Image (cartoon, rainbow, N blue to C red):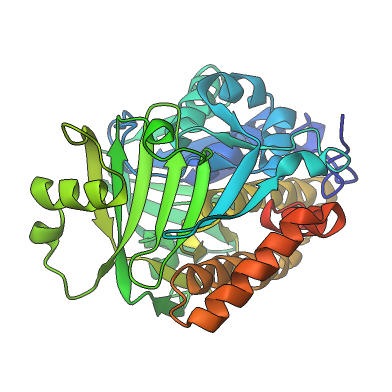
Amino acid sequence: MGTDSANSSAPRPHAPRPNAKDVPVLVIGLGPVGATAALILAQAGCRVTVLEADACLERDLTESRASTFHPPTLRMLQDLGVGEELHRTGLISRTYQYRDRHEGLVAEFDLSVLEADTAFPYRLQSEQQNLVDIIHRRLEAMPNVEVVLGARVEAAYQDNGQAVVRTGGERPREWRAPWAVAADGASSTVRKGLAVDFPGMTYPERFLIVSIEDDLNALIPGICEVNYVSDPEEWLVLLRTPRHWRVLFPVPEEADADAVTDPDAIQRRLLDLAPNPGGYTVAHTSLYHVHQRVATDFRHGPFLLAGDAAHLNNPLGGMGMNSGIHDAVDAAGAILSAIDQDTEPLEGYSDRRRDVALNLVRAATHRNWENLQQKSADQRRRNHEELSGIAADPVRSREYLRVSSMLTTRA
């Protein structure tokens, strides 16, 4: 068993804490980030109220939501008591590849070189909704937790040092607590209500995700569960989930959305990727804009922003959901430390998590995008030679994978 060195020395914030018993905390949003924060706080003894805008948590698992769990995230979820159940919903991916669309395999990275660093030297592929469902069931069984569905936030502000949230829709009400974790997503009403700036950029193309029921392993021999495919005209990502393969295509901003998502157009893209007699069975398609944005501050008084409410990045590398879950662990730990010490030790939360968002997640995911769409033949060749050299050297490969697997960060 490995040591998970990035987290082994950190205290486990979800252990029961006498001082936390019945202390009220609000969690806004019941995605993977809010769910994680809520369970940590509830296990510590806080009286947790979770406000979720949707009236129903059922999700179509073919939708293109996050599905990659990195080693440190798996360690955190194991400590939280949900890791084994999550593993039963997913598949383990021990390798991933960089490929060239015309030349084939460039480099294959084997995460087994991380065995000395982590008990989880692999990626787990499981749709994020599986984690939400697992934690939701745990929360519903806890007497100190109230999960309120259909509670859409209309306003958020602080009053006399307390977090105040006003909901409308099916659950109109005002909610108050000494602390609140805002994990209400990319369009966060809390972040907007608190007037926290969200600077950054939007990519010049949209991402088209196509979920298919066909087995790409049989159609493209030699690929593994996760594949980043570079090409100056149309780069790709091929990703296997427990139920489907997903294919990510870049789409020019000016392209007509209806034309891009037309079933015949989808078939042409897929058949150009790999011939398939009889065509492909498409389970789901989605087309969306992609951003790189980081809030100027992850803390506003008693509110702690986490996940997409605090930072957005492209999905190339699978870091978005993982860094959001790490935010949740850090935010919950900061709140519990404040309760234990009866002081204000929350200031460091924003600095720590913004540093990760800016200097790891944003930097790594943007670099991945630049390399995949690189148009210079000379630079593409240099990129390929560098990746191939790193993958062939166990020492360099381990250091590379420690970064890409997020083991060099601390939560």
